[in-house]
Image 1 (cartoon, helix red, strand yellow):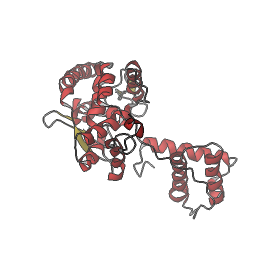
Image 2: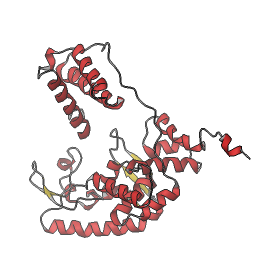
Image 3: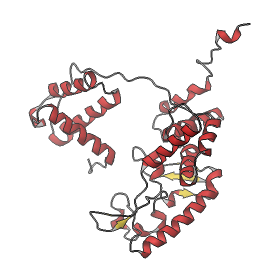
Image 4: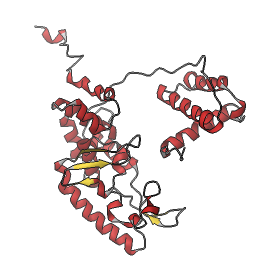
Length: 308
C-alpha cells in the first residue's frame, strides 16, 4: 500500500478489515479461503452488524486488494452477496445568519480555521495540514497540496480573515524561532522530500499553519518535531459554538464546507467553478448542493399557505 502511495487512513482501514476477516474465519490463512468466505463475511457485516453501504464497500475493497495485490489470487464474481443499501442523503447546510452566529462564538485560532473551512470550502484534514507557504496573500488564494485523492487545487482566501491570519503567522514565526533555539524546529515533510531538501524540515514556510501545542520526538529519525494540531480540536470547537448559538442542526466541520458550496450557488456562481474549488472529480458530486435552490419541496408551494 505504501509503494502505491495509499493514504495512511486507507492503510489503517484496510488493515482493520483484513484483520476482522481473518478473525471471522477462525484465524485461517486468507490463501486457504475463497470468494464464498468473502461473501459470508460481507453478508455478516450487512445483516448482523447492520453496517452502512459505504462501510461494506470499504471492507470489500480491502479484501479485493488483499487477494489481488498481495496474494495474487483471483476471487472471481462474488455470488449471493447481500449488498447494503446506499441511502440518498442531502447535506446539512447552515444559512448565512446561522454561519455568522456560529463564527461569533469562536475566537482566536479556532475562528481562523472556521473561516477557512467556510470561506474556502476546505475539508477538515486539508485545513489542519496546511503549511505556512500554502497561503498566498497576493493572489488571495489557498493552495491545497495533496488533498483527498492526492490531488492539488487552489481555492479562495476570504478577505475578512487576512489581517488575523497575518498576525497568526507572526506568532508562528516567533514560536518557530523559539523551537530552533531549543534545537527543535523540525516539521514532517511529505514522502522523501527531507532527503532531497535537507534544510526544508526547519524552514519556516514548511511549518504547519496550525501546529500542535507540544513538541514530540520522531521515533524513527530521532528529531524533535512539531506536528499539526488534532482534527478533533476544531471539530469540538465548532460543535460547541453551534450549541451556544442555539442551532439544532447537526453541525460539523464538513457542514461549513457544505454551506460554502450552497451559498456560492445561491450567489450565482458557476457550478463547474465550485466543482474545482471543492476538488470534486465529477460534477455530479457537486450537483447535490442544487437542492437548496428550490425552496421547500422542489419549489412546490404548500396548499396550507394558500388557505384563506
